[in-house]
Length: 122
Image (cartoon, rainbow, N blue to C red; front, side):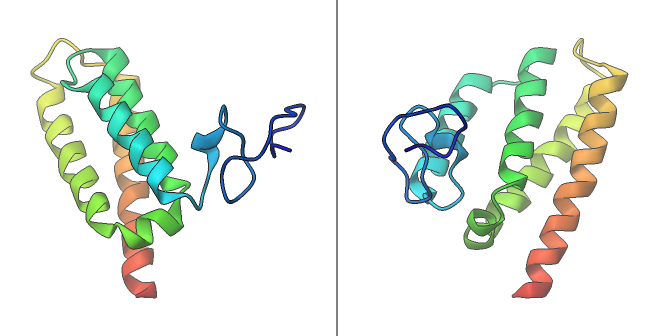
């Protein structure tokens, strides 16, 4: 049975999530990669507040997958570069929003903390 409460579907991932909830996996790296790829296709180019918010949610999703990030540390560098670019470009676009700016800055700090933690572990 699926690990999600009140879901009676059959396990699909190695850590016990069904096909409907497979993106919750922490161990199936191919599913995580496909989820990232599909999300990036949906949000590129980031030209609206909604897409920026989806990008920030994707980063949050990745921060909960530390075993995946340990194996793909280059992704952290890409995320920080994109976040720096968005921060600098934010003021010059129509998508500026103080709340989104705060989320972006806080996630940038969190991503760098995770990066430092992973580098120290290795």
